[in-house]
Length: 379
Image (cartoon, rainbow, N blue to C red; front, side, top):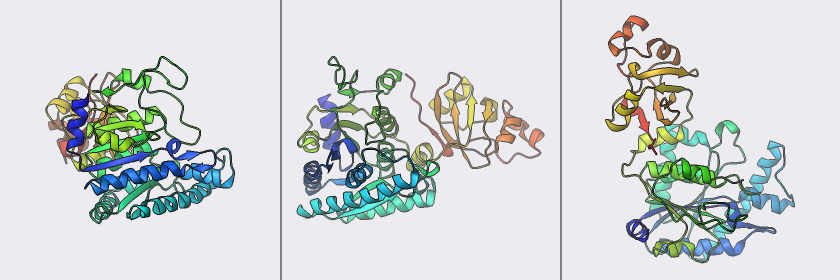
């Protein structure tokens, strides 16, 4: 375990740090002691030459406390207004804290549309890389003031994973209000044991990553494990650790055995395939046979119509579509060369027969391997 940590942290130059609402807030509002501690530690890492990107929750919680509300309003306009109030206070406190350590910050608010559109996605990456090159700390949050379900990233666990992939980070550190992933709920079960290392996110890990989200946050432990699945698929390790622990970031970089360490896969998805896999909302679903599954996973082949068993959903040429095996495993996402109606006509056929059923054959492949992101890892 320690060997893995020392190995990875010794070569980390760029780190994404995510801080959850449970870490940053208390009954009276923002926990300024924690904000100061996180700011101090990040500043020290930057002084050592680290490139740091911060994904910070806490806007909704800060807004609720500032307005004297005990829970989230039911109406969307009220929730978005609370987020606007809280975000202003959150970034102000960060700016003041980091200024004490001679650091400048920049606020970046994103929606899923900013990440699913390829041009905007690249613009976000260019802006963040520029800020990092200027030694400015980007502080990122979802733009809750304008977001709707259709353009919602989901939660900051997911957002931090997407940012880690976007910026080709060396590691993602997810700071929460417990020490990591446990075998059981540590807040209710005294027999719960910390899982210090996860070599593979299998069904057993997913089954124990249960538990309700916090009162003020939106992501529970399952959302953190889902985020880890994304990063390790791109060969980026992730750690879940307790953000309230004194000097947690510095101790992690010293190689101390804290939190839960998710060991990354060996094969790293390229930037485009990360974008396809984790930023696009699938418009439909293909179920493929075992032969096609093996060809896609082990041989890096394209998906041909002969390997397709069924088509679900309505989609057009160029849309993102997820593909599943016959055992019910989601294998990945790809951009299709044919519409759902046309795929339904040619599924199970040899590519040489496409023109007989469609009148023409623009492509041999339903999904070309360059537009296919295979992310599933068998248990």
